[in-house]
Length: 562
Ligand code: F6P
Image 1 (cartoon, protein in one colour):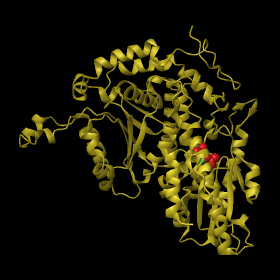
Image 2 (tube, rainbow, N blue to C red; image 1 turned 90 degrees about the horizontal axis):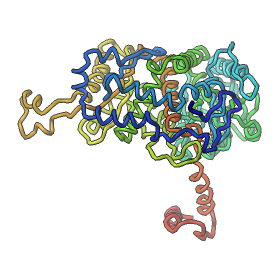
Image 3 (cartoon, helix red, strand yellow; image 1 turned 135 degrees about the vertical axis):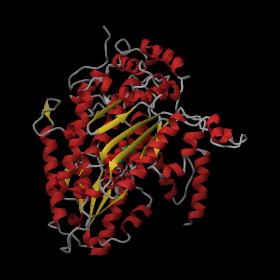
């Protein structure tokens, strides 16, 4: 029987002993079988595949957690998914899923659990980590967030001068910004219209300046969101905010009335001058990019209210349950993850596009970039061995239909294969049915055009000039998933985010990489400290810097002036 490098209890520690390590991915018989299958399938066009199987739409679609998935426009036949699923089984996906949900320390390089699923666990459930049930703590923080959100929303929370709060500014970066910023934008129709919510992330002073230029400090509350409370960008902006409040309200202003914190770092929050009664905690088992449903989502809860936030968590939970309990053959995150591997590792696609046909989801691609690329942009296995296959693809995208008038030309006519996820909604509170028909017609049309294209013969029949026919023809055969939901509600958003969280995890299991650490961001941070010291040094030496960096520092100093 095959030995898996994972143990189903919360004391799991990855065993790097090579005799216990799983076989290398590309040496698995399931991988070799897929390689053979790819040779047979990749030459078949989507036109052919649709002609050969009149029931593709029925066979390759499913519903989960309020979302409908159409996988039929993929370059697969009926035997492809079973073979991909066999690979997932061989990699121990079922055991890894259970390990994640039960608090095993699957983030092996940081020796931590990745228990973001506990953030949406029902109050009545129990999840043990190192012998302690984490669920009561989760709900304690949710209750604390709820009380605070209601105070701000009702006007009971007053600023230093006694005025109610009308502006909430979230200061954070990476996972402490992208998720909340995306969710606020996505759920605007559910947000309190009298409350303005803004997000400051960039250490570039212009971000803070532009976000606060038209605000009155007496009516502004800052949420300083940082898991570590040491992140340079966030702490710089938090200090800017404190100075801005004092400039407007006087040096003795009660700063505590204008600042709350979301963090795991009690001491640093207190040292900053924030009353720890107004600190909302979370835990080291929540990764930054998996944290938008933790206290990091405080701005979301203030905007949409505790009931709306509970609906959001409900959507996450539905997808969690689907992922944990549904056979792989009908499991949406598993199928999406496996299709991603099919294109990434067999078709050698370099990127994946996410194209939401909703203005409200305009920040969704940016949010997904951190979730997918910080998680699966890895080059060594759990055991520290360099991989000999591609890991995470580059994710990118933009809301439809804007992208159609920008980069879709490359999707249709370029030389690269770019698998696409289309996301659409049947109803939109801002739109008449006819408005929404127009938007969604574009989504459906793009999926069909990408898949089936238009041959030169068809172009000629339609009256094209012979010389222009090659230019006007569409090769087609470009794959896409279509995800359709009734409306973009808090619950739908939760399902959608959990879908991608589990997709990322599934792919990480198959590639045998740690989807939960992020050592790659450290080197730049450390080097920046040396550079900033050199920029401030009255007598710079250039020592310790390579010649290119030293020359850039020198030129910058000259142009910057004293
Ligand atoms: O630099 C990367 C990172 O560590 C992300 O993983 C994280 O989301 C972000 O920085 C912000 O970290 P923090 O919440 O600790 O300020």
